[in-house]
Length: 346
Image (cartoon, rainbow, N blue to C red; front, side, top):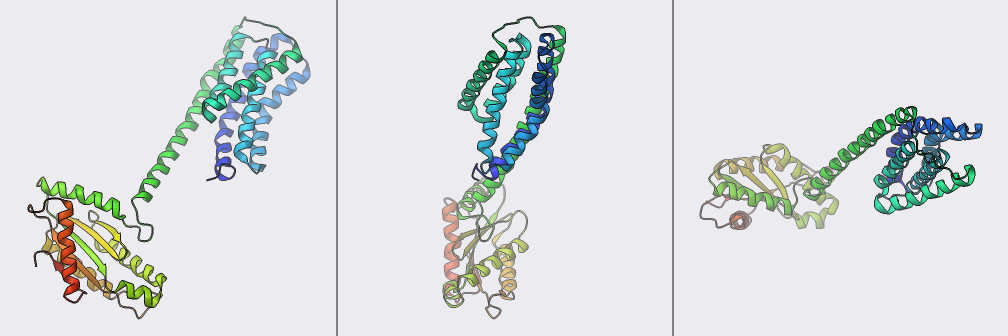
């Protein structure tokens, strides 16, 4: 998704909570640093604005912007300018200054990595310069107990808030990764496994059989005269036929059975713990059931299947040899008139 639209607004939403918490408790930290200096009323007003109004205004500006991502990055730099300004206003009082600037730096590096961290540092330096021009140069290294206790919430609560946001983001990324993994191994039309992933499963199943864990059968399924269906009724009807077959496969097979689209109008199924004789019964029922199903786009079209089966045999050299046996059985089903199930043992 373009950063200037949906993902940018999502970024602004993720920043909103930690900014609200951080600037809210940061208010106490800065206020404790300013209190002994007795600043003018406008300074307190600016601090109240920065601590309690600016987080909501920043989020509103990002939402209203045509480019929320850029707007929110700009808001983060404004945060850094404020941080540098308050450091100078507190006369660089050690603990409050380090606390505020460290939290700003944490924000910047979490939001944009090293490059944005550098921009944030420049923004903090700009804020310090503005503060020095406003209040004059001064340095107060002493930190009182009041200032120490005022900084503790910032040191404890803000990292927790940022950690919670990072945790939620990691959960979402894991969900997206899982969804992408599912898409990468699924055929978009039929929602069955695609050719590549099914072949990986076939090799895995062959190794299990070779190790003597169980017996299994491979089935190759071909829609009879599928090219004629596409030519005579159109590709929309052809696609509906493939979807009907995939839906019927999902209903007919067990949870452990592995169905995929091998390519074009050809489907493939691995039936673990199933000898070829039982697999033939399953495929025969599928063939008969699909013969009764009709596509809404072509109600008079009858769908027939040719199916080739091959059980695992120790004589097979590898998974490709196993698949070749099923393919030869499928070829025999077609040669014998189609619309039937043939096993490699027949």
